[in-house]
Each structure stands twice: as structure tokens, then as C-alpha cells.
Amino acid sequence: MKYPCPKCEQPGISLKNKYRLGYMQDTHCEHCDARISANPWFLVPFSLIYMWALAICAFLYMFEGAGAMVIVYAVGAWLLIDALNVMLIPMKEMGGYGPNAT
Image 1: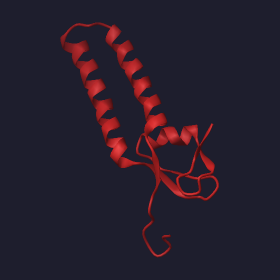
Image 2: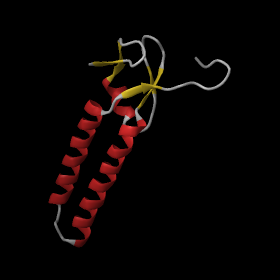
Image 3: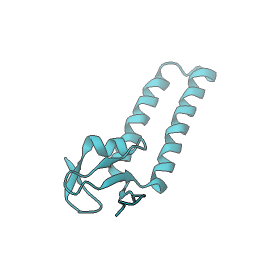
Image 4: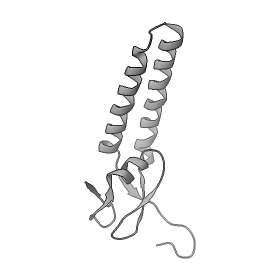
């Protein structure tokens, strides 16, 4: 499955590379070689959701004695947030800097 590039609109971003964008990495389009990143205005709330899910599960495990079931909930929440991350976070072309920037 390929996702469309925000610059050339061709399907040039692989699922693996789209997933990596959610972890604040960048990638390049296979067709136009544009440098692509996740839109930071959407990435910040997802990063906060990751932190809160981890904090809540750690609190329940350590202080409430919820047991190993909390680990199952944490893994489920992590997978759900990752799936939403790939489906919902829009990509954008990164602007270049320097003499060769377009």
C-alpha cells in the first residue's frame, strides 16, 4: 500500500515510511524525491496521547495493583494509537534551506 505524496500526488510513500513519520522522522517520495514529514500540528497531540497512555498504565500497574492485565491494555492502546497515527496524520513537504532549496 502506497500513500500519495503531498507534492506530486503520486503514490510514492510506503506504509513503513508513513509509520516512521509518526516518530518524527522524515522520508522521501519515490517519484519526485521531495522530503516529507508528518504535519507537526497533528503529531504533537498524538505524542501526548502516547505519553498519557503510558503514564496511566504505569500508574495503574505500580500503585493500584491492577496486575498484568494493565500490560495488555497498554499494548492494545499502543497498537490503536499507532494505527490512528498512520491513518490520520497528514503529511507535508518539508521546506529546504540553503542555496539549493526549492
